[in-house]
Length: 210
Image (cartoon, rainbow, N blue to C red; front, top):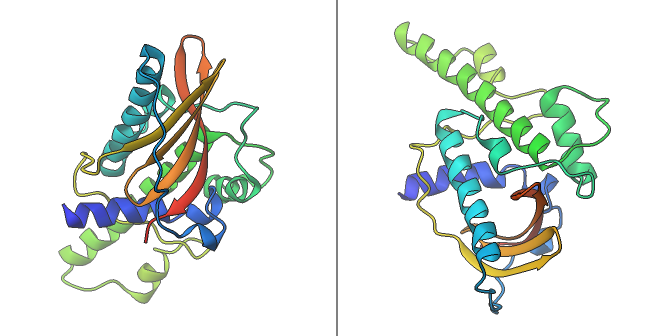
């Protein structure tokens, strides 16, 4: 369990600097206060979407099957990713002319980049093992992308062990704001109601737990 926690935490933290965690002062203890969460069917539905999103990401960190992402994440022009995250999406998709991106764009870009890098690394290691040798200098170099990033290891399985602790849920019309502690971080999620379903459309960092 500890090993899986480390791997998933690494996957979560690798891009904190570009998705709402650019300020080093955010590395602090979690908020001490917990707000009352309305006991309504709508709030329960919103919390379920968040829980499903974490489960889907945990599964994708193991299988790299991304087909469920549009079930829980969405792009909403009201909540574009910030400039740093947009730069990361441009880099990971090799699309420098991309003008804007949303949460679904970011999630698909990051997990696609992670998948491709992991498959490449696994292929190199399997080949080296079959040939009873270590990686060559050129092979090691290829494990780092042109921006100096190397992907975290594939998760050990598809199940998330860490519980979510919801701190507050606030709903105004078709927008919901959720603050939760997911283990390594305290974050604020923005959900939007599209049709008759809620989707995660934004993320803001509050603190990184030491």
